[in-house]
Length: 493
Image (cartoon, rainbow, N blue to C red; front, side, top):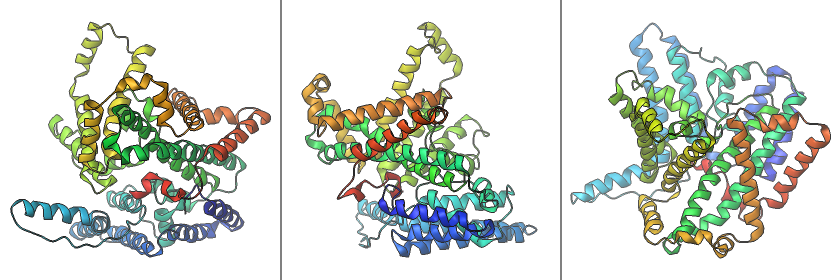
């Protein structure tokens, strides 16, 4: 069941109405049932994996407390529960990838190892809910929180439908607390949630899905495309994945907000970042912070010298790449980002100051901010090329087309632009919509909330904005036959 579907338009109001009619003590049971139904709308059998991960981490957390005086048993129980979840994730997400690579290694020395031809659908959202469950288990083991005794409350924490299949990856200290102490119906929450959902739907169906319709055929036939077309497609993909994932996040946050829950923010104007490190502090915040707290810091963080710090950083980004998908191109994408972070940290601040003084660069001026933002976007967009490609070979092939067979002067030709987009209306809708998104992010980077400004206006102005958003979604969005192909990108992770 997609957020941007008629099914959800029917499902959510029913859940909402029943939820607030029930006594507070019984509401979490209803949300748990709704969440499991929501998940089972894809592949009902996969709900077994969700339940299994929930049971393992629930019992593991309880036993961690039970064996608090026996260090060996406590640690053994903790490691066993972690290993069971990682094994489940590895089997269903990385099994074919691992077997193919093992077979390739043996083939290199002349030994044939057949790879079983077993295919199955990847359980949707498995990386998200397993990481959320593991975060809870680690928090209990560290003593940051107490184990949740009520199984059904904990099961709701793992399966809460707004953020179940694509995050944000919530922390137990935030979401479990709200499940234990639900808030009542609040009109302001409804207003805020609906506006948040409207924006999420707008950037998903008007921007992300329109971009997908434009660039997917170009990537599919990249060998015959011009360098200019591939450059523009790659630039647009950066906005597609942002609007697609941010669109889902806003729909999740908005849905939860109407129900009275506050989920963590996952994006803070990432393309307004002025360096790569700043970008990763603003992009997919829930996952980035998860890796920081549960992998980077346990590895030693920056406490064991600079060399160890850089190695830890590279490990985190390589694992992050693998988390996104079972393919070497994802690992390369993560590795390149890790290298960019390390290179950023390698240059001492005093060296940067000397360079700025030498070239008389005022970093507070708008010119430098625009340049550094554009340069950061270019670097990040370069890495997105491998993320979007189906393989490393495809990524390198696109780069060859860009640099070897390129005619970048095509950008100055009106015929190129009209030929790139299916029609002029689509081009204008995308340009206007992207300008609005970047303007909103520009304000957000300055600490100004456009949503808050809209809600502070008079009734007439607010409704003009609301109706305008609805009209653009209806007339500018991508719908119809084959629409399932444009489901949220991060659902596959």
